[in-house]
Structure formats: C-alpha cells, structure tokens
Length: 321
Image (cartoon, rainbow, N blue to C red):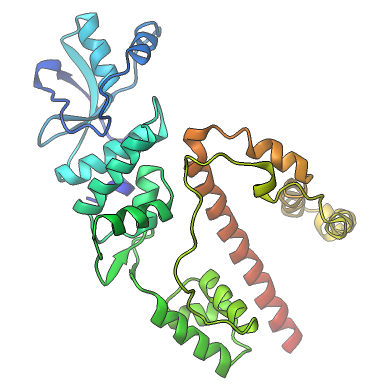
C-alpha cells in the first residue's frame, strides 16, 4: 500500500467497539488536548469517522474523537479501516493530523519525519516533507543529522525513481546544452531524466559562467524564524509593462470573446496584484499552514512553467515553418 495515495474518504464506514481499539504509536506526543476535547464535546451532531489500522486496531486518526466517545459513555464508534504495514499506518496518521483538526506541533512533525526517514529511507526529501508538513530542506537536515546517507536513488511524490545525487545528470544536461543550444528545456529534461526546472537552472548557471552543479546547499530559513517585510521581496510595485500587456490582452478579441480566453485572463489578472497586497496576504497565512501552502504555491509555479514551455515550444515550431 502506498500511504500517500490512500483516499480515506472513499473507505467504507463501519461501527467498532471501543474496547477493541488501541491508541498507542500516535505522532502526537503530548496526548489529547483538553480544550480540543471540550470543543468536540460541545459539537452538535455526529463526529466524522475515525481512521483505524485494521491489522492492529490502532487508531490512525481520531484520538480526540475516541476520547469524546469514551467520555460520553459510548460503547461503539464509527470508523474507516485501512490495511497495510504499521509503518504505512504511521504515515497516514501524520498526514491526517497535519491536514485537518488540531494540527501537530512543529516538534511532533519533525519527530515524525525522523521516524518516516527510518521506515521509508527510499523516499525523497520532498515526499517525506509532503507527508509531515515541513520543508524538504528541513527533512534533508534531519537526514544528515541522523547520519543517514540514504540510498543511491529515491522515490518522489510522483512515484518516479530518481538518483539521490543529481550532480551527474546536471553535468550531462550541461553537455547537451553546450553541444545543442537549440534544444528546449523539456527535450533536455527528457533525455537526461531530470525536471525542466533543473535544466533551466543548469542553463542559467552556464550563461553566468558558473558550474552546473551548485556548491553546497542553500541555507533555508527555519520555520521558527519570523518573516520580516524586508526579507520577502514582495514590497515592490507591480511591473507597469506587465500591466500594460495585460490590458492589451484583455482587449484582444481572440481571448475576450471566448470562454477559455476569459478564464485565462482572470488567471493572469490574479497574479498582477500590487506588491503590498502580496505582503498583506503573505503575513496573514496561519503559521501551522506555512509548509502546506508553500507546497501548493510551488506546485502551481511548476504548472505555470510547464504551460509557458509549451507555448514557447509552439512559438518556435511556428517560426520554423
């Protein structure tokens, strides 16, 4: 079972006797939160089903709901059952607890990441980060501190296997770019087996006369460090040329008079808000959602990059005809 691909909502709901359930091996080291239990006790209507690991009958998600059921004097509780190994069940428990209900503390998420690195050493830093709600840089740091050199290749969130050390592929990409500068990012990426964004970085380094392989690693900002307005880089005004271009696009009948064109214009307009508005949004993101929203933003950026590359490739093909 791949714990990151389980659709928990699709699992059938059953009734289970409370006496059969165990609450050990929870990623929440502090146990139940009394305030959260009180909040659930005052909630009207039925609470959502808990998630239970069928082979061990351990509660994967729903310790507070289990506590409420016991306080109410219930003998049974509604639950969804999941199979797989205990290690996979722990991953599910972490994912469930960072995505809804009472969030796990940063310390708990880091401890969970260390545990998952031990049980799933073949997973990439990004895949562990996605499951635990911390950054990939933090996962890599935890892996180094634990003395884990990892495996030669790791499995990413998309299920693809990639080498843990990508320096050789970066050098291969650099050779292709030097020998055939007309190749697109996607063509180089496909031949070498890396992402188009990595190829873009390699190409940029070559243009600046730098090595295609970064020296060392960038020191990432830790989660505990507060954001300062001067550090974000969002305070700048919107590029006026970009606004003029957007207005010209809005007046183009090819976009303005079609449904898909209007959707595209709305999407483009959303990213043309003023720098101060970006600042306002940025500083109002709840701290426990920093990593989750950062991951969404990064994935959307990758979608836009792919979108841009397709258009650039089509433009190149048209020019060559």
